Structures are given as C-alpha cells and as structure tokens.
Length: 358
Image (cartoon, rainbow, N blue to C red; front, side, top):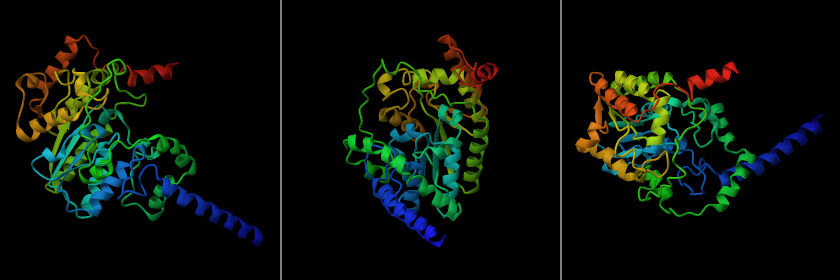
C-alpha cells in the first residue's frame, strides 16, 4: 500500500511538473503574462489583467471607462475630466463592473469618474456563464485561497492550452503596440479603418442565449449607490448599436430597458435609427462601431458638441426620469416608420415559450 501511494504521488508530481510549466509558458489567455502581454491571437482575459494592472499602478489613472468590447474604440485620452483607463472586456456587464469597483475601493482605489457604456448586451446577457468562458472569467479578488487557486488551475487545462496552439501558430502580429496599449489606455487599436462587408453583415449581431434579464437593474442601481457613497461622478451612456442589430434588440425589449434605465439613472442616449447607426461605414462589422463614432460620443458627453439633426433622431439625447417619454416617442416612432415589430420578444421570451410547448 505504501509503495502504491508513493507511485501515485510520483505520478502526480510528474504530471504537475510537465503540465504546469506548459500551461504557464503557452498561456493563451495572458493570465500568467498579465503584466507583459503577448499578442498571440487569442482573446485575453481582460476581466483579470485589467483590474490587476490598475491595482499594481493605482496612481496612473483617476477615472475608468467600463463596458463591453464596443467601448474599446473610444479614445480615453480625449475624455477631459480625468485620466481614464478603458476597462472594456468581452461582453463586459454591470455585475462585473460592480465587482471590480468594489475590489478597487476596498484597496483604496477610489476613482474620480466612472463612465459606463450599456446596450443590448447589458440587458440580454447573464453574467453567470462567463465563469466557464476563460476570456471572460472573473478573478475572485476577495475570495478564499482555494477559490483563487481554482481560478488559475482552470487556465492550466492541457486540453484547452493545446487547442489554442493552432490559433497561436497561425497568428501574425500586425499590431506591435497591442500589449503596451492595453496596459496604458486599455483601448483597442483606434487607427484601424473600417472595411465593412455589407453582404456578410446585413444581419444582426445576436446570440441564441440572449434573454431579457431584470436583475441588471438592481446591479445598475447598486453601482449608482456605491458611487454616490464614495463621491464618484458616475455617467452612463448607450452604445450606438448597428441598425440591423438594434432592430433585433427592440423586438426583444431593448426599448423597455432604455425606459427603465431612466428611472434609475440619467444617461446619454446614442441608440436608435439615425445617420450614424444606419451608415455601415461607421462599423467594423455588425457589432463594433469605429473610433470616429467613439469621437462623436466623446464630443457630446465631454465637449457639449451636439449635432442638431442627430439630436432630433435621439443621438446625444440626455435622458432623465422626467424627459424619458420624449426619447421613447422618438424611438418608437422610428420603429413604426420602418414598420418594425417592437417588444414581441420573438427571439427570447416567446421563443422560449414556444420551445416549452413543443
């Protein structure tokens, strides 16, 4: 028995000595190279390395921009009321922003400003599945030792690491500033020029797991309460969603989200059918707007530069609890003008009901 135990211990020690260095060296998600990022073609876990970056350099920034990857094309250097770091992450959600802000504040990092971009992803995506998606996984900043160890062990899975090798081998690094940029401003490459393919993107950006999620309003409310408690200036805005994607969103309750959002917090609206969202030249594909649109958002929110025609279409409209009906009238009228269904939930709530009855 004793010999068997020794053999088992030796076996596991060998496995450990082989697979741990293998996972750490390959490190497809840049968890073990979080302070010296490697552009390997695999989406890094921004929900880990960005908060870590801030915690290691708490004096470099006094303000933060949160949101999904869509806000990655906003030039934070042009935001003029602080020194901003872009905390954007793939499908970044309010529940995750809240957890990161709490971790910052607990460590004495209290920002002057927090700006948060929201959109259909905010309303339709449940944060829970992100725990099983390695490039979206949250680190348990204030968890137990076992929870923290478990986080890193997930990234050492030899099957996952091996599967990434083909992507890494085929990747060509055409962005030499990638790592430095993500650690200094946090943004994507703002110099990329849109090469929109109309044939491929004449459809919405949509995932079959999208579902209206009422819990998001409590999370947004908690963010607001946290910022109020610590004297942090909080600003919300809606991303200008590509026309076809917005079309799908409003059929599944996105306008309901916008109306309820105004009951919790004021926000700048950039959603709707307007000269920006209907021009495919402003987008990289059917999800991400380009940096010229990011500049327009900054112009409105930080420099008060509103285009009167766009404002009539709801782009740049500052929404409050008292004037939300004015915006909703504009957005519902746009949908009616294009003879589009609104709030039928044909791809979410009613789709689920249909499946349940089969």
